[in-house]
Length: 128
Image (cartoon, rainbow, N blue to C red):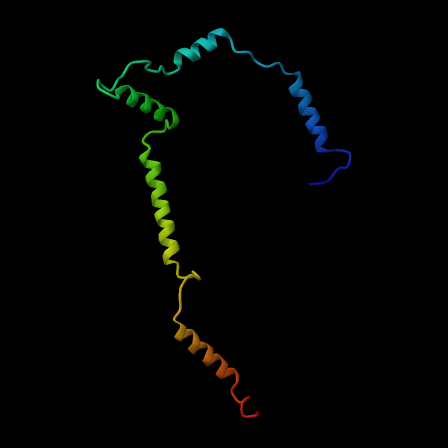
């Protein structure tokens, strides 16, 4: 991209803003509003579709609320996906062989240090 000092993004912004200022917003007609309201799902106000009994209206209202909040079908499918991903993450985190969380016996660590120091100090103690 070649920089042109006579051309800037500000000019583009002003040009586009000028175009938007010239546009008139489209107003919804009364017929369109009526069609939208007619096509909207109706709520069961005061009626229970789940049968009679104590709490049946509450259940139907709760079902309508759940359908409104999550209209994508069964809620157990994404929940099981999240649980499976969490379990995979936990198992991978616990069994990761490259993890620094592994413990080492103190005897093994001390033995390794002694071997490393003795190999490094070989022949130096005789000079003292």
